[in-house]
Length: 80
Image (cartoon, rainbow, N blue to C red; front, side):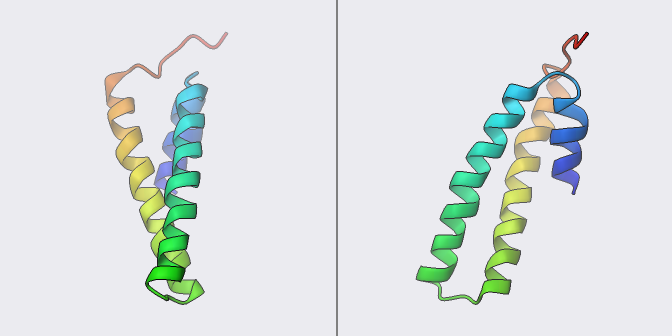
């Protein structure tokens, strides 16, 4: 949930919706779909293990992308 607090609660609320959209799209397409494909078809893992690994990887990538953006201060825009 830490990644979603950054994306939805802080960055998107601060006016940085475009960055949040790209992070969500890239993580969903590359990490979620690609990771699921690799875990199931290549490593022959069962569904609960696959979902756990893919969710951890997705959250880790989102956190790794959002923390530098948060610290830079580029996300602060005037919304009104």
